[in-house]
Image (cartoon, rainbow, N blue to C red; front, side, top):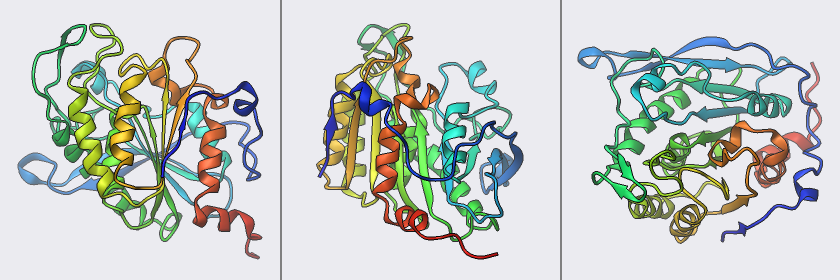
Length: 308
């Protein structure tokens, strides 16, 4: 079954969050770590994919949030990526007692490895796309990095055997949906913030390249998804507009997975696509509610901590 929330009231948005560990007063600095990506380097060598690791207070082990960043429009902008997620997300997840892992995938930052997420979509004018993009290739190319990060987490003393939640922004949201369809070990659910590909808000605000192709791809993923999942899109998403995300989710939900769709109110500064980077008051209540529905977390948080 699925649900669509067309509007969140101010009361709901400002409601209290889960009765979990208190949010950290300050966000700690990350640890720079390296995740091996076999076959992604020169001549099929192993590529060392950099990632930022944030650990909450305490001794661990911890539940884990694996975050997948979005895709900037130009090669130069993609190579400038240093911090994959914003402070509001970090404060939220660390405050819940999660370790946060944020890889910088091939094609971004200084990672190297070409551009496996290339899809050829290019908007020429409003509603006019230059080609037939291959969004399946984008999903497949980026999913390799996400799957490698999952394997790496399973080998870390603070994360081995712990529940993992996936979260992605924009193209990272698309990758999160793709990986979620494979039911990877340890993953208990995922959150898709503004997931999609092929948009250009300067040349074609609110209209992406061949959105029907993404609907077909999401429908395919939906037929193979059993993990609980939450999709959150702002009504003023400048990349996709208000209607296409609803159509994408309806195509996905037809597969029968336990999925929830939230149409968040317009972001005041116009950056609806960047909803996940904005203040947690705009999205935390719905994420809180989703996490409560995950049995592995509900049981964990309702049980007293083990004696040390």
